[in-house]
Structures are given as C-alpha cells and as structure tokens.
Length: 239
Image (cartoon, rainbow, N blue to C red; front, side, top):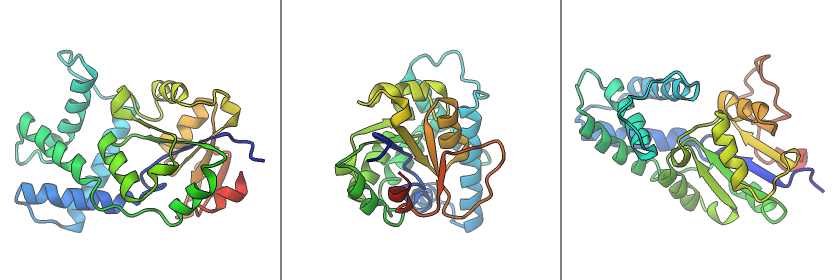
C-alpha cells in the first residue's frame, strides 16, 4: 500500500507539454500584433515570461497601491508582462489586457500530454486523491485537462490566480492544504518539473516531493527532492 494518500501534480511540463501550448498561443498574439514569428522571438518570450513570474514568486515585484482587489492584481500582473515584453510597440494597458485574455484562451487549444500522463493517472486515481496545483490560468488549466482527457481523474484544482499567490509562496500552500480532503502532510506527495516552484515549495512547506526530470538535468545542491523520476510511469513503482 502506498505511503501517500494525496498526490499533488503540477500541470505544465509535468502532465501537459507546455511548450506546444505556449508556442501556439504566442503565434496568435504575434498575428494579432501583425508581427512575424521566429524561434528566437519565441525563446526570448519563454525566458522573459519565466523570469517575470519568478520575480513575482520571490516577492520582489511591486504592485501599485491603487490596485486593491485580487482580480485587479491578477489582471495587472498578466497585462504588465505584455507591456514590458513588447515595449518597443508601446502597448497601452487596455490593449495588453485584451492580449492577455486572448493568450490565456489560446493556451488551452493546442494540447499534448506528456508521455503516459493519462495512463499514470488512470492507474492512480482509484487509490489516491489527485490534486492539480498550477501557477497557470484557471481556464487554460481546465481546457488542458479536458482536451487531454485527464479531468475525470482529478479530485481538485488550485490555481494561483484564484488566490493571488503562486508556488512556492507559503500562502499558495496554505490554500492547497485547505483544498485537500487528506490533512496529513506526511501522506502528501508533490510531483513537478520545476525546482524553484514545485520542489522548493514542497521543501518549505513540509510536503514530500518528486522531481520530474525528463532531461536528466543535474540537481543543484540547494534542492533535495524526496525522489526523482525521468518518466511519469516510474512514479507508480516509486510510491
């Protein structure tokens, strides 16, 4: 019998191939702006977007005082990244808000699951509470789960935009804990590809972690996941 009752999965690049989703959505944005796609532009966007959200997750990003509600904060954060990335165009805030809405909608269109994701969840869901914990937009997350035919295996979904905090922030994990039926952290396992959000978040909040490392990257000394897998189906044997 598995030690773990609750399995908390990251979504993008753990169960869903986020690269394909982002590339499709980014192409749509470029078409909207009448810009030509290039691999260099796409790679620069991915690097910028990752750095942008890491800055937010670290608590280093300043939110203007006039923004009071959670909804306004999320709108500001998501729109601001388009203003910054396309600064040479000089996007106004309302245009950036519209671009973000389009981008988030398109993230849920071109969906490709990570190899064996559905098989793994099908094998696990009868005996485990399965929660999705993502820093991505909620609507896109739901679309991805539905189109990849994973939604029926999921007990719960928690997204950063609903609570105003992202992994690895402790507030995100407080909300996650309130979502789970199981309240024993020793019987929870967080599975994800990101060391800075998933693994660090688990480490800092008393939850065992499984690092999904399909590219066999070297593990930095400051991180210590409970276990590591290179393919999703290895998780079944590990637990």
